[in-house]
Image (cartoon, each protein chain N blue to C red):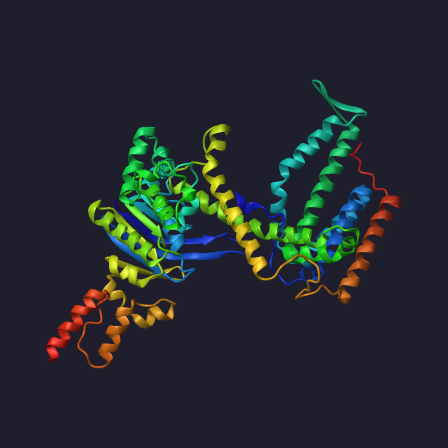
Amino acid sequence: MELKLEHVSYTYQPSTPYEMKALEDVSMTIGSGEFIGMIGHTGSGKSTLVQHLNGLLMATQGKVLVDGENIAGKNYPLRELRCRVGLVFQYPEYQLFEATVLEDVAFGPKNRNLSKEEAFECAREAMRSVGLDESYESRSPFELSGGQKRRAAIAGILAMKPELLVLDEPTAGMDPEGRGEILRLLKRLHEEKKISIVLVSHSMEDVADYAGRIIVLDKGKILYDDEPSKVFVHVKELEEIGLAAPAVSYVMAQLRERGWNVAPSVTTIDGAAEEILREIRNRS
Amino acid sequence: MLKDITLGQYYPATSILHRLDPRVKLVGTLVFIITLFAFGSVSSYLVAAAVLVIVIVLSTVPVGFILRGLRMIFVLMLITALLNLFLTPGEPVVRIWKFQITAEGIRMAIHMAVRLSFLIIGSSIMTLTTTPNQLTDGLETGLGWMGRLHIPIHEIAMMMSIALRFIPILMEETNRIMSAQKARGADFDSGGIIRRAKALIPLLVPLFVSAFRRANDLAMAMEARGYRGGGGRTKMKPLIYQTRDYVSYGIIAGYAAAMFLTWKFVEIQVSFLP
């Protein structure tokens, strides 16, 4: 599927003293099979933007097109869209409510009017793909650990078999091990199941390691929309809006200052190691 | 849907009304309501209406904002008016099947409608110009003498301010969970009443869980900072009466007297009123 935003603006509580412009003239296209990282400071409009992708919020100005069709149209099947675009909110474990994990994960597919058996089948498959085996099926979601809860909640979205998966800070408040697990899971989903992914994050490293394209938001506007290597060259500008480039970008920038001939566009640790080795060989 | 509730909402501004001591505003509102019901006549309503207009202008709150609160209770007012209209005994004017509208009924319905809308507008102005914290502060200080009667006034005030503080938080939480479940295909606005009630389970269970979690966290945070009830607790911003507060008390007394006098001595005949 192709998702297109055309000049989208959004204002919270218009014409009250609490009026707040959250998005201003945002245009972008999300194609099939992409892995997009979206970064921005708190209050930059990230969370507002992702809610436009599945029609939870409707643009005050501009339009959102899915395969060319405007989702604000009167008879647009919004519930179907919400199955195709799976949105995982921040702290998704707070939305668990059923008595067992299996039933909770099956909530989405059930709303798709599948039979109970089919819904459970989808749920089991989703649980397997997030690494929760059969022993978790009949347990209460409230007795799982934090990381397991988060994975169960993500499974609840995956069970709807979305074509595009949007995650709002899926690693917030997790330990490094849990973060690694979730990010590897996303990578696997992207590579094996060909699901497009939009990953909203604070962490430059996460985004730089996995995303093929990065969108930087600031004060409700798109600042950069490009490959990671091209975005992270702008170390100074990113710092000005309260963000930082990955640590590797800083190392590369410092090396260049000292006369090393390394590429500034390297963003991953492996790439940096290679680049430095190459330069050392060149020098000797 | 939830955004339309203005009752209890605060409108940030710096008008004279916003700066007034919350105790004055509480007493003023109380006097306003009592006089509305005790001295109800066409002439005294005119006095009350004039006072309302002056107060609204002084508060600098947009009129539309105040009236939005009225919209919410319109149904309630309609029901009250209908009940009064049909169920007050007296001289029948119109007969519809088994019901009859009496002259007294019409009078009563109009009286109640005026009183209720004045009451709502009056108390909305108080909450619009007073933050919930000031309000409970005012209650606590103003009713401090009740502590001598072994009424735990500080605890009641603390509970009130926590409850008020949590309204917007829980509303936001409700919106968030609603969006999250909608993202999973939940449907909150279609189907019959039973289906709708059932659809609320995925909303209510997480909401309760999170409310309990928040209450727990808050209790712990308060204890960690040494909170152990009201005894000997001092305030960062104690309430102290200023000149403008004493003047306002005078104005309130004057208003009450004016209401009483117009009710007692000025009679306005409205020809279409029986």
